[in-house]
Length: 419
Length: 83
Image (cartoon, rainbow over all chains, first blue to last red; front, side, top):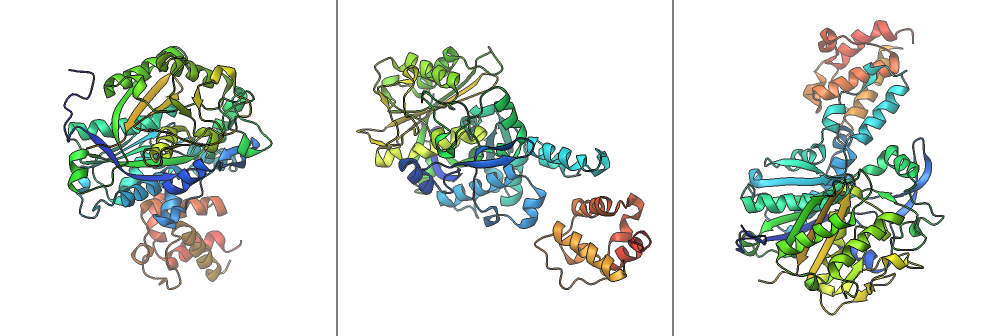
C-alpha cells in the first residue's frame, strides 16, 4: 500500500465532467463565476419564524424546471435543490444519459443535517391544533429520512444505482465528492453524481443556535455581512444552495470525448477529537498534509487555497494557523474565500466553493474574498486575494478546505487535467 | 352546505393535493384515482384536510366510500349539511 493513489491508471484517475449548481448568487456555473469575479454578493435580508429579521443566502432557481408542482408538495426543499443540480450537471456533462445504464450511477450527496426543516414545520402545524398528533403529517418520515435529498433524485431521474447522503456537518460537500471518487475506483458505479446540498435557511433553529452562541453575522448591509479575515467580522451568514458534479473514470471520459473540468488529485478526512464546536488547527493541518501526501505533492505545488473560513472571529484565525503551518509563513500560495459572497452554504459549501474556483484553470483568475476593509493581522497571507480578483501566472493545483462541527475535517485537491 | 358546495370543497382539496391535474372534467361516479394521479399518500392528504378543516375523522374502514366525488358527497353530507 502506498499513500499516493496506487495505480495511476486511466481507471483510477477520476475527473469532473459536469457541474450543476444553485448558489445565492448564481444558478449556473458561468453566472456564479461571473459574480465571483465581479464582487456580486448573494446575501439578502431574510425573515424566519420566531426569530424575525436576519440575513441569509437565498437561492432563486426554478424548481419547476425539473419537477412538477405535486413533486414540490410531496418532497423537500433539499430534494428540489438536489434534483435541480443533478439535472444541470448531467446536461452539462453532455453524457448520453438516456442510454446510460441507470443501475451503474451512484448518488452521494453531502448534507450538514436533514429533516429539521420538515420537523419544525410540522411542530408549528400541530401547534395550531393544540399539539394533537392526529394532525401530524404522514409525509413526515419519507421527507425526513437522511437519504431523502439523494433519494428524490433517483425518483425524479429514474436512477436505480445506489444513493445516500453523507452526514458530515460543513465538511460534507467535499466528502460527497470523496465518496464518489472511492466508489468509481472500486468499480461500484460507472458515473457518480456527487457534491453537497443545504436547505438550512428554512429552519429557524440553525439561526437561533448560531445567534445564541454569538456566531450569527449582523450587518446593516446584507452584502457586507459575510467578511472572513476582516477585523470586524462577527459571524456566519446561513445560506442554502447545492452543487452536484458528474464524476467519471478518466478512461470513460476520454472514450466519449468529454469536457474535463479538473482531475481529482488527492483528498483526506480526519477528526479533531477535541470539541463539539471549536476547531483544532493541528488536526486541520494534519488533514491538509494527508491530502497533499495522497496527491503525491508538496505544498509548494498548490497554487490556490480556497478556505473554509466562515467569518467567525475564532474559526478564521484557526484555519489561517493551519494553512500557515503547512505552507510556511512566506508562502506565495493564493488564498481566497467564497463564503464572503454567498455566506455559509453548510453541507453544500465544499462543493459550491470548489465549483466557483474550477474556472481558474482556464482563465487564471483567482476570485477574491470580499468585504475585507481591514485585514485581521492574524489572517494575513502574502497572497490573500482581497476585494478584487487577481490574474495568476499559473493555476495547476487548487486545494479546497471544508471543516465542520464535532471536529470533522475534509480537504480536497484538484488539478488541471493533463493527459 | 349543499351537495354542490361539498363537491366544490372536495375539488378544492384535490386541486391542492394534485396541483398539476386537470379537474375540469372529473366524472362524479368514476373513482378519482382512475381519473387523476392520486396515490395512497395523496388520499391520506384528503383525509387529513377533512380533519383539519371540518374536524371530520374518517375511519380507515370508510376510506373506500370517498373514492368518487359522489361518494364523498354522500359520505360527507351528514357531517356538512348544517355548516
